[in-house]
Image (cartoon, rainbow, N blue to C red; front, top):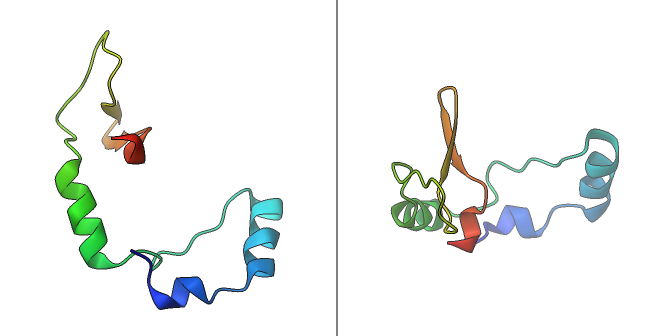
Length: 71
């Protein structure tokens, strides 16, 4: 699931960024194969209204799942 580079990141750098910026970004954290498998499970065209399942959120031209891993 994770690339080796991600597992060797300095924890202090991550903590510093979260405390000062509110987030930490590691664009290469996940293996490409894992991302492809995850995207196959996500249906961004499934918009749910009055339904208690996990569906897509659409904001202007962006689509995402608020509970992506819950699905």
